[in-house]
Length: 592
Image (cartoon, rainbow, N blue to C red; front, side):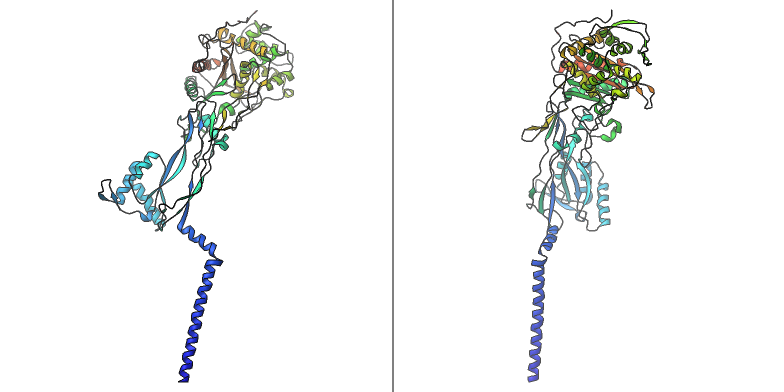
């Protein structure tokens, strides 16, 4: 009996020990879960039962001077399914009736809205399940617009999900596309104002946290904003979208008509330096970048320097008058060829005998030999300094992405031929923006203002930052500027263009330029870049217009640019209600 009791006590003791051991194991495990690894386990559990969504902020708008949207943000939707959940379902109509919807029918309904076949959608689902029988994600459409999304949402398909994200839209297509630039598929800015002003335009994304069910779908009512999104600010340009459109249309017509390769039209407000149009052809359509050639996706007006040709004779004429070395009636005998004592050779664009020209006549006839003889009155050092003050050889104040400074070699490096070539726009290069800016100085009484393309960054609260400087630089005296503009009136009235440059009721001042292009190895190609730059009304210039066409073949002189110059300048005067001229032109003599 005692033996039996001892066995029972032993068994009870062992049982107690086992119970205590099990209890201790549970306690240790509980401590491990609740104390030692609590944070890690909570994080793991959280990832299985919760999720986080990106809340996209809207990228800021790009506006023209009148507030018209040139670039903006829109909502787009990516459509996805949980392949493991793709099954037939019951649809309840508005009247309460129900109907069974097969997978094939649902796929066909989706496809009809987004423009694909139902089979394509079913193949996406099937491929996802082949890779993972429990797949919870497969994308079936990207960047669906709002109308398509609404139509799809109305189908009430339980296994179809839509994720919203922002996208960029450009309502004017290629109009000002060269300036606006574009963004990539990831909304990263790649060119133009989109890139240049990204610090103003960019938004800040936020986040939302949610709880999800075992099917991976967010539980209704569980969404909570953890970080609010911030929208970008707007960039306001100086450009007038309507004028930009007009200039691009006229330019495209003329480049095609003359069989040129590209063209540029720039319009600048004389009293402010604001660019009202920077039109190019060909240009880029930001909505379909791949449709354009890579070389046409930038802004040539800023990035492509070229020899300006005879438009630069105007700058030398103004410099000579400012320095007291000439006036509009200063005389020179200009022959078809001129052979300076330093061994250089200068010729005019057309053969002719001696012409008794005034400085005004030199500009009207665009005589290289005449301007070369008058230019000898000024030292290379002084002439170089004037060119610098006109902005030649330096980037504009705009600072556009990829902007070129052009080429103006130091005067000490000018050889005998370059000493003269720079007098008539060869031996150096400049951009369209530099050209129009130099003429703006003459139109503004000799004061060159910083070129402006961006008026500022308009914050959501209305404050404006990034406002450009408006401090000008005196280039020549007011008298020198006025006299030079008066001399340029002889080009439309007595030059080789007939009435092409004239605008009824307005005094127009202009200068042509035809520059043979270099071949990159010291020689010259058989192609030309032709230009026409000028202003109106000449007695008090309000706007400066410059037209450049590269490689015209049907007309190989500045006459190719003349019609577009007249058309655009006429439109500018009309658009801005500029009063006609009321004072007669001084009509400086062109010959003696």
